[in-house]
Length: 352
Image (tube, rainbow, N blue to C red; front, top):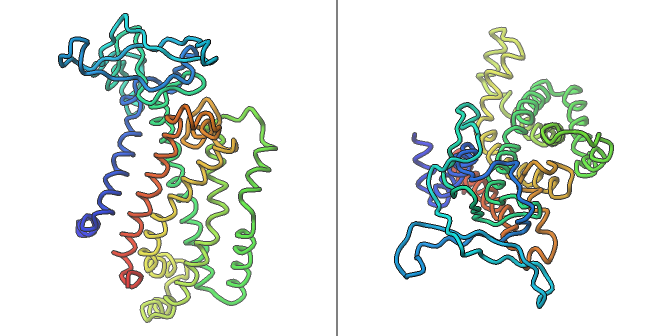
């Protein structure tokens, strides 16, 4: 509680904490919050603009929120396809509307979504993509991959880095030299080019789940070495402390000393490093998916959704396709602000 109180004393860190909590809460309940499923598609509405929501009726009086469907037409003057509103029928936006079946938290089956329109209507808060898929819904589902890849990688990076660096620093000598040379060799591997090679040789039939797991494992197996080097340096200074020498005299095993007495002394650094590492993994996954090396269509991640925005015409005429980039920016900025606050709290010397 004291730690949380100190975080909320920093206005920027408090705002970052709230933003991240909301993002994870939203992606947790994405099936319920999204008006459409992750597989929904309407090719007739390819690149349809965001739906306009009206709260004033044609008589100028307040009304329940409603929208009109878009109709795709060809404009001979502009010589391009345009979308016009079909004002022959209103579609009222209703809460807890009955639509596609899904499971809340993957457990509770239901047909209810937070909001939607009656049968025959379409509502797209952030427009649609080239395949007529709702961008808003895909943002929610794509966040599940982009926002969790960092934590899954940390589950591999930090246990390996902690144990490897702890053993290297504790035993020293030839063991330390050999282990650190191996770690430096791992750090020298160009991860980006390695992933490009793997993307070229992997079977095309791999599912997005398998690719996602591969991305996590590769990023983790390359990223642990730098962390291990830092832990090793901290262990070199801690192992000379009196409490460690006392454990040796009492006959404690080396593994017990490392796990119970030395590695816990690195807790502050580990927490700081974990908080500051997550953004790099989010950016790595987004970048790889953007380049076509990560999550593949039709599955969504913020990276492969942003790929459509690389075309100049899309940026100019379909700015809603940039929404994934905005969420990546917000998530990374929030993690960095929160990480800086955690560092200042757990390591006051760095603040000075």
